[in-house]
Amino acid sequence: MATLAERFPENAPTACPGTDSDKAGKTDACEGCPNQQICSTAPKGPDPDIEKIKENMTHIKHKVLVMSGKGGVGKSTITSQISLALANTGHNVGVVDLDLCGPSIPKLLGAPPNMPVHQSTEGWTPVYVLDNLSVISMPFLLDAEDTAVIWRGSKKTGMIKQFLRDVDWDELDVLLVDTPPGTSDEHIGAAQLIPDISGVILVTTPQEVSLLDVRKMATFCRKVKLPIMGVVENMSGFVCPGCTKASIIFPSTTGGAARLCEELEIPYIGRIPLDPRVGKACDMGGVCIVDKFPETVSGQAFQSLVTHLSDFLKISTG
Amino acid sequence: MDNLGEVTLTGVKRIILVLSGKGGVGKSTVTTQLALTAQKNGMKVGVLDIDLCGPSIPRMLGVQNREVHQHDQGWLPVYTDNTQTMGVMSIGFLLGNQDDPVVWRGPKKTAMIRQFLTDVSWGDLDLLVIDTPPGTSDEHIAVMESLKGIKVDGAILVTTPQAVAVGDVRRELTFCKKTGLKVLGIIENMSGFVCPNCSECTNIFSSGGGKSLADHAKVPFLGSIPIEPQLALAAESGHNFITAFGQSEAASRFTTIFGGLWRTEPSESTMDTS
Image (cartoon, rainbow over all chains, first blue to last red; front, side, top):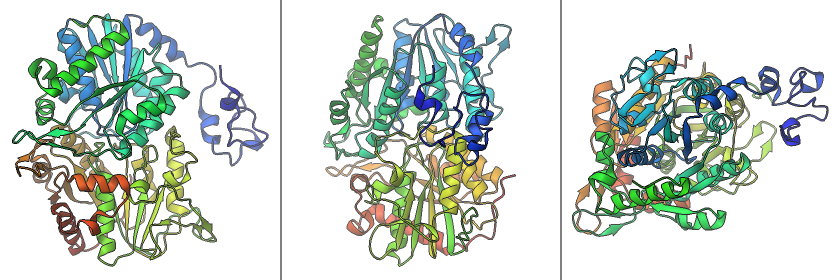
């Protein structure tokens, strides 16, 4: 049910008919209103796809979004590492890659980009990178790796709906949803379309330029009532493999994620260092840091994050 | 108010877009450092930040709490100092509260970007650098459409050495080709970290991806910038890294890149979004 503020936005004229009215965008009062185009073209009433998506996702126990606001902080790396770690402990895991323009998930999970997505009467079959780890991402639907997805927001929303409505997911314990940077159509789509989201993991680096965006994302999550599981600080410190001296490469001038979490009263759930092994694992694809480097600080950091998530979702840690 | 509604930019000599495709590779850092290098070389520079959801430019140039003022010809850019040789425009200046997210769908973002190009009175500039968000979506389509018919020198593409970054930049190259935007070259950022203690260089984000992409795509490789914590700190705190650390390796790389760009003749091509 739309709130009063949604029906009569702050920037609407005095005689606004209401965004949910049949006359929305079409009355004399609407001329010059910044919302006019959206109001006159948006469909009225509940979106029928919401029900279809809900039905398609009934076999999925938990849906977890990985978000940031800031680009390049490690959302996709963390999504893929969590999915590999959970799959290796016997859970059935799915990954939806909502970054349509810059999809990193196939590469990070070691899936060749030209693996086809089969369509049948049951829907689209996701790509299986392991028997119990399935993925859907744009590169699987494109002809060539270099193809650019130059789409406006409405087209992106349409594709996101298809990912959620038409992909034939198995019975999944966890569906991880990777998102692009920003707070735009993809994020609005995920919040509106995915039913019963269990939680959101927010990823940041220590820098204020990243925290600025994460604060905005936290505000967005609270506005649309998405439960925030916690914040992970990635690229947090570096230890030289040559002399073991610690260096701060991405400095925090405002207290980093720990201070942000205190301010916003959100759990601080992890701190992952800069580790060239993580970069190499990403380039190779399909390498689970928790399994391959269990004794390292990075391995233990990822394990701790997976344990946090498992506790939060009340699923076994394997 | 002749220029309202129409993008003219007649006083602007050169326009460069900074693109990536990949987030977090240093587009805003490269934008600001090139702008500061140009300013240091006596130029009048404008920086337009069209990353509406995550505007980093105001903080990086130390002007994050300023407001935009209007005069007869439109909005005035925010100047970083009294010399008025560095003017900035960003949605960051228009937000009441910095924690408020800009949760806009495409059409509203498109309208804002157009307004930045029609309503800001840039004046006479030697260089306008346009910082973009990652991706190839509404913002990128909007800026290309708004600049249709305007002489644009081209785009600098920023990547880090890793495969995931290079993959996205390949797509951005496709975008440039489709829209007729000349690629001035590729910059590989975060290219190795030299430990201050033992001088060992660690390729934290792998190595070589930017150079091999430039070779493969037959576009100029403009240079690589090492990981420099002082640069990250300067960007955090809005201090001028180029003047404070002019002798550093990173600053000298920016000087070389800037010199290379200025040796190239301005492009005669105009934007085509068909």
